[in-house]
Amino acid sequence: MSQAGEAISRTWDTLLAGLEGRERQRGGEVLRRLSENLTRLTWRLDECKVVGAALPIAPDPSYSGPPLTELQLRFVDKVEAFHQHVYATLAVLALALNHRKEPRAKQPYPIGSISKFLDALKERDFRYKDRLLDQVTVLEKSADFRSKYVDHPEQHQLHDWMTMVYLGNYRVIYFIKRDDTVVYRPGSSDPDSPDFRPPLGGVEEFYVSPDLDRTYDAVQRVIMGALRLK
Image (cartoon, rainbow, N blue to C red; front, side, top):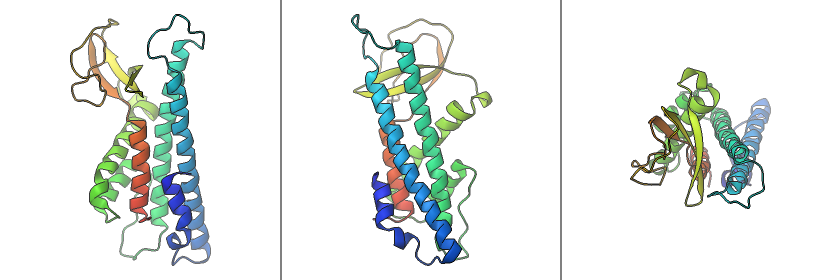
């Protein structure tokens, strides 16, 4: 079970304090879904790592496994599924916060738009807020990635993709190119560095998929802060 999932289980009655009857039942259903989503998110992360670890770092003449293009596509599939589930988990968090017993004057969190929910979250008072604002930014990057490159590519210029590994960390690079040449580019090989450029000629623009571990950790921290879990 994830860190946030364990905290929800441990503080279940506290989270439902002040709710009675149907409200308590509904609140419990939402918390159960949130806990289930956190478990499934852990599965998604594990799946990404398993498929990523199968990607060869360099060509191996003795390799006899599935075609490299198939392994790469499997990894892309798992990365995109992970960020889709981050989005779904944050949607349930919004419901969980709205089902808590709060003063009537307090506005409910927006639902139906994760970007608006995260904007609202940054404006509210939650546990360790000052330390967690950077984590909310990480989740904003995940939500933006899901929107532009996973669920709504028709609203943006279509990108090609490639996979790469840096210090054991596997990532997907989405890019728009003019040609297929492979070139050496000076600068950092770290995909998170502002000096990074993909090793392709004629790249007009590119985007690096958000770091999986960092995003997973941000989900745990933000949920625990927003629900004031210990």
